[in-house]
Image (tube, rainbow, N blue to C red):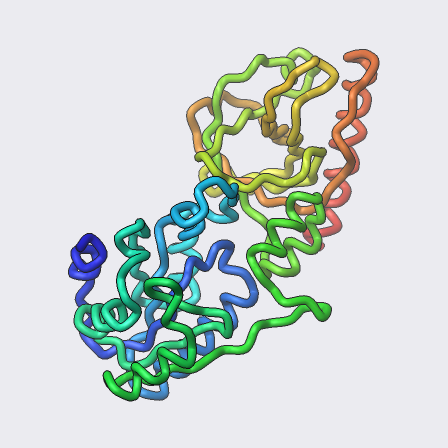
Length: 309
């Protein structure tokens, strides 16, 4: 079984307290659960650990239902480890794993990860047919020698924090809500590729980004962003959309790095969404578009200065 082969790669030196989930976004709710996990582990002198999945189970169980990823796996692991979680175990999810009985799965966690405690959310379930809910897991725990704690959902402004809610806010361009629920600005990480150089012709050369398939993107529009090129922060304006002034139909992400000149094709670029400037729109001429971009750059520069204060 592949899941057992993957678990064998990890050999914790102490008994562990674990939590299990995709944790897409590593949002405020996830962060508070993991802080609780760390406290529980520390109280028992055990190692806090997170078992996550390389891809979302929904991609396997409901392949026709699109689900866009907030954070790629490597970024997810980095964010979790930055919280002080020493053990992060990414597992592949497939139809074989989906058919593993809950008792067998937790048995593997005990055998390979030395699990002695499990922290879960209220709607959590694992195993074939989602048979391993909180009630079933607590019963198994008493029989198999591990405890189970259910961590309450986190509310912000009366709304449960979830990856689904964040995806909805992102798709509507509500940058401030996304930032509030994530606990940090939304980050896009892409590779700079050659474009049609229309921005350069307008006097505002842009970095055209390509992303891995399934990456969640904000609603089409123009955004105030902070870009990171080799770790260096740069003020920027980012356009997400189909560039209607030029009759384009393919969605693109273009970043204008304010005050930056240089050849950066092939480089990795990370951008944080700071705020939304305006909707994407069709202009009657390139001159009108050029004037609007100049206004966008001026407004973005002013807004970023205010944020930095």
